Length: 193
Image 1 (cartoon, rainbow, N blue to C red):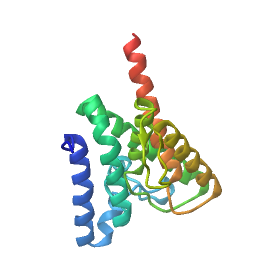
Image 2 (image 1 turned 45 degrees about the horizontal axis):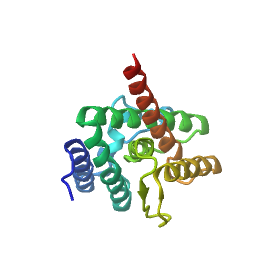
Image 3 (image 1 turned 90 degrees about the vertical axis):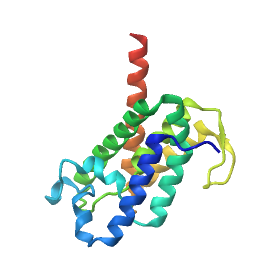
Image 4 (image 1 turned 135 degrees about the horizontal axis):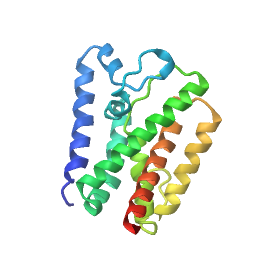
């Protein structure tokens, strides 16, 4: 097993470290870093980035870090640290923008936390770079090509998002995928010039 690349490792360590830190601090400290809907009056300009480093519970953290390691490590090796970091940031910001728009439309006042938007951006990128790579997802545990896995999860997120409130930021996940798609298309356009 090869070592975890630098940006992936730093992101994972920051998420785990902050999770541990915020379990020791009073809950009101986390309020400043979660992504709050615009209508709450608690929104701050740094939250579209800071929310990605926070997680609701151990399982939320575990599955996001597992996905980051599975998909992010290989993408960082292919692209290098700088390009990979740009994609992570783009996915995180578009996930935040999608979630802010969605919460504004439905009148939600609940905050959002987690690296899932960035992770879904990595998932889409992995499917675009390695479409025919066979992967074995945890859910469902059926070997499938990456492109089908991405399509399945993207469709599932859209369906679940349209079905209503579940406490999961489905549109943030889709926003993360959109950010990755936009960034990759920008890179392709820049290469053609």
